Length: 124
Image (tube, rainbow, N blue to C red; front, side, top):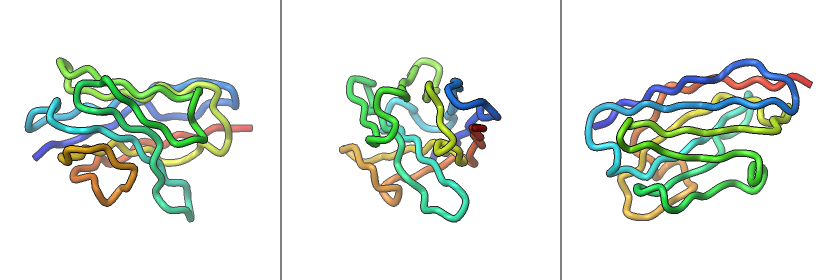
């Protein structure tokens, strides 16, 4: 089992940047595909980005491509989400998740472990 704790959320103006971190403890971090999801009030949880175990491949939803970057440091058991050029529509609770599957998925139901979330609010 793995425990995930997100940090780095906050209030930022349109066009600003934030870096989210997700620290993992428990079983071997490098054994998981890691993902970031977000959920705005009244909306379903949506996929944002994912990174494979080695960090060699990354995946993004179209709305964040070119603005967000997912990365991981397996030595520190941490995954990051660098968010630039933030927009009001990026406002949501952001969750990191760990997937034990062999292959990447953007489906939240495929992920086995979840953090508690960190709030990101982008003001216009």
